[in-house]
Image (cartoon, rainbow, N blue to C red):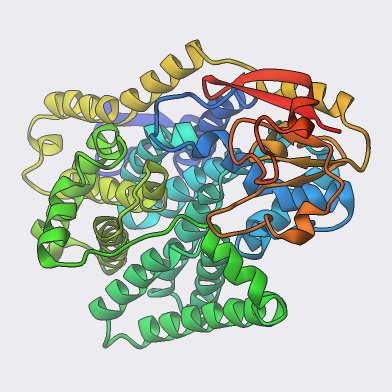
Length: 509
């Protein structure tokens, strides 16, 4: 039996029922979306054990923060306690730390296991964008937005490292998509509540996610202030946020207030502009002082800018869900970017939480261009295909090429380093030094990170600890006096090249 294709009765445009049904099923199934998410995850998984590439950021963060981020989860699994000293970032990285502890409990402790959470979060964020944007934007714009995110050079760099920002991106993306969907759902309050819980997870993972969340809520709230369903959705979201906040205050902040406040001091100090002139200077200089973020993100930034312009130009033709989506992304991006303009310390990893918003605006741009009557897709379809191919290449190839270049010269120092140190250190030892949690990650020992600027882990109580092991390289304990008899009697048990310098595990009397 033959049936005509939609919109045509000509014999040349008929399909067998089986082929037509298969075509419709393929169009509805999420196989492309799942395939894209798996492909992004596979690229990251292929190099999960490789050391961070040097020169991508001016910060030393990639060579220290992975271990510090998972240190308390590692303590919980290996030592039976979250806290061994004054370095307690699990209190301000709650959801991330809980998930890492779960992974370590099942798969064991190690840098590869620690990175699995980030790779999973990136894959799920890619999937959430491609599936969640399909209804308001269409399949092709949704896939383009997801591909632009998954192949972004900062996503590919940090996406395989144990960073909290990867979970933040997933939670914020899920929350934003749920809130946009809530505006057209009879159960808007329930979806809003789920969105609020996701936003709460993002903020509990990294507090600066609150800026983007505020931009999303304010943007949608202003757009549809008269809509009862939107008001219910935002009310549900605020209730979800309040619920997560109440849990954190009751379980974490109130009983451990001093430890939390000390954690906040460990974070890098930020200073706001002291004058209008200084503010303008920070805004104007950001493209050149963004730690390489803006040059590397130029294709994505241009796509997001085009999406913003397309939202304004095509506003009347956009459906209500598409309007909510665009406004949410613009609010999210604007507030996050404004904060980056204001603060004094701006490493490129601070850009990560706004990348899903930029990708959404890329999808909005594609949606407007594909649905306008005057587009090339209608007037000159051949040329439109070429333009679409160029756009896809411009958005995806720079990140993939950069990633390939990084991995072509990648080293594999970390896992052998950790295995060697674990074979040297006796159970229950105390290891001092900023690199201690990194090199001794898999050993059942206590690692102490001295932080003199705060100060943390440098008081008399810590000086009395029976520490006979020191990891040199950075943050050497204050009780170590170069040239002293104790230091002169040390024995170097292992040395490694890390961050271009020598890091040694020393045994002291």
